[in-house]
Length: 284
Image (cartoon, rainbow, N blue to C red; front, side, top):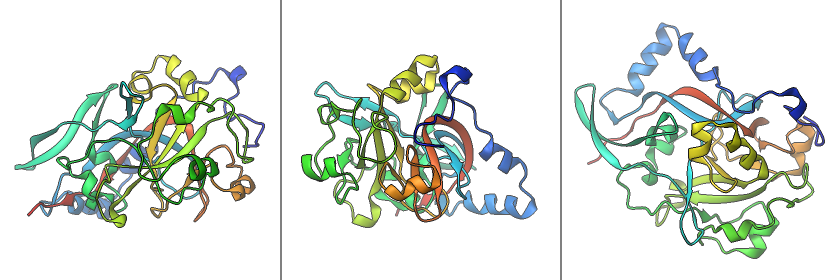
């Protein structure tokens, strides 16, 4: 996609919200060996896991097999932005009682299992009962100059930090498409290796997406904010939106780009896909 082009021009009439079939089609084509792998990942040696449907920004290029999972957002009365986390509850799976965090949201079961891949299933914040407040906090060493200069790492994200989102630009791709930040979630007082990285964007494009009448988009975004767990589904690297000038060489200046193997995700095209969530470690 060129910097001036639009994947789905307005005159095409094509809706940006589409139902993806990447994950479900892949699972449908699994052979005997892969099916055995599913049995392994959902065995009683861990908590939860298994085939999971979720929403996320579509993978549009590169080797990544599917979307990264979206994190639904809510904003409190003081303008602080947080990720929605379901209330924990006990369910029975394969004859065992386990604790899960899940809820019905926007027409789908949203759960902690959305984030159980790439080792994140072992992170403290994915524990359904982890003592976390769910606010997004600014990450250290961000790739964005505005974030380096205007906010302190560890402080909570506030709507007021994004007042220029409709015009913001950093010389990568088109100006005014969206203002990004690299933040963390459910990672207070945990080791650095257990920090959950999040790509947060505020955009007029997201505001327009919510006008399509889709329940999920209406329930998972607010005031133009959208977020996803920032772990590439290929080799678990941390991509970035408008973070690297080199993304322009791969027609990814206006998308989320992973420099490791050039996977590209479209943050403004949210799709529904499936994958096999890995089990969390059993609690002692």
